[in-house]
Structures are given as structure tokens and as C-alpha cells.
Image (cartoon, rainbow, N blue to C red; front, top):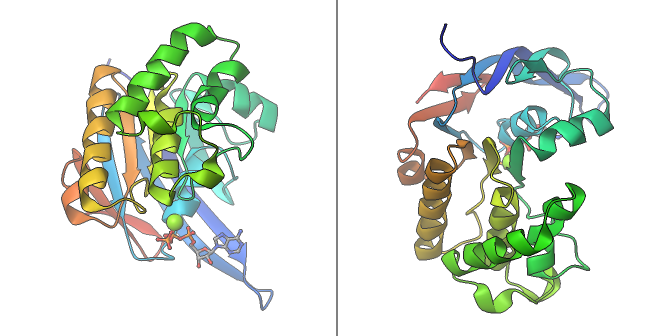
Length: 228
Ligand SMILES: Nc1ncnc2c1ncn2[C@@H]1O[C@H](COP(=O)(O)OP(=O)(O)OP(=O)(O)O)[C@@H](O)[C@H]1O
Ligand SMILES: [Mg+2]
């Protein structure tokens, strides 16, 4: 029997209340399967629902209808605590806005998932420093987010998502704030680490050349996913 997908969505829909009070459908019957170690890009116009879709995939919001599976486990209907416990060992999420904890340094932010998971901090501290080196910001290790540039914050968020070797990395435009050189370096590192750790990657981007680096390129349009 073939292995089951690492992530699957079946007929997922999402609607939001618009300011006038009526419901607007953002996602209409999305079905998607991502295999182990597969890399997938999702593109689409601003407002097409990419972040909405990633939030559903990450269990950060609930669909209106349909089901979402992390491996064989259906996550729709689980409590926030159940989701958090499952996510810890499964997924690294990179938000469109980096969402770092303002009081913690870059290094402490990267190590935050390690603390939550009660894993060995000293082991992961050297891994966190390696990631900071690879992302060209080792000198910023002790800086708090407020004192980092937008691009540096985004690189810290990338390192934080990778620190626990997740099976699936979900990245929402992680290079939107980076210049071309650093964006390319960050993508190459993300792909290299995903290969090394055998992680799957779902990557939202507006950049066509970055999308082409993924094994499958999808576009979100009118609430549906299409092969690009
Ligand atoms: N919590 C919410 N309540 C109401 N409407 C929302 C909510 N979140 C998103 N929307 C709407 O859903 C649509 C899709 O938003 P989303 O953030 O998913 O787009 P996106 O494709 O990620 O855009 P961008 O490329 O600009 O990041 C937009 O019209 C947005 O206004
Ligand atoms: Mg978005």
C-alpha cells in the first residue's frame, strides 16, 4: 500500500462575514494531498485566500466545511491544546508577519518551540546558532525583534520553524521582506534543510522563480486550487 499523504484536505470551504453582514466564500471546495518530502508552492493574487488556506492547514482556524488530516489524523474538531500538542512534533509554521515574541532575543525566539516541547536546550542552542549562520544573521542572536529589520525578523521566524525538524514546513511568503539575494539564500536554505530533514514544504509566494523551485506549483484563484 502506498504511504498516506503527510497532509490532506478534502472539500475544504471557508467563509467570512463581510462588513455588510453577508457571508463571503474565500475557499470553495479545496482538496489537496501533500506527500512526504514533497515541496509545493501556492501562488495567487493578494486577497485570493492563501493565508486563510495556510491557517486552516496549520490548525490555526477552522474550516466552514470539509476535513483536514495531518497524516492519518483528522484535525477538524480538535481542541486548541490537542492541536498544539500534535503540531509541536509535526509542523513548523512561518507566518506572513514574522510573529516573534517581542521580549525574547532572536536566539530565544528560535528556541521557544524547544522550551515548549521540553527538549534539550543545549543541544538545540548550537543548532539554532548554525541556522543563524546559514541565514547570515549570527550577530543578531542576542537582539530583540524590535531592533531587527523586517527581513532579519523573517529569517529568525524561518529558523524557529525549522528548529525541531518538522515533518511539514508551512511558509506564508517568508521572503516577502527580503532583498533578492537574501530571499534566494533563504529559499535555498529552506529547501536544503527540508531535504536534509526529509520535511515536506508548502510555500506561498508571489515570486515565479521561487515557485518553480518546488516540485509542484499551484495557484489559488476564485476559491479553488489549480495546477500552475
Ligand atoms: N478574519 C477575517 N474576517 C473577515 N475576512 C477575512 C478574514 N481573514 C481574511 N479575510 C478576507 O479573506 C480574503 C482572503 O484573505 P487572505 O489573507 O487569505 O489573502 P491572501 O491571499 O493571503 O492575500 P495576500 O497575498 O495579500 O497576503 C480577503 O478578502 C480578506 O479580507
Ligand atoms: Mg497572505
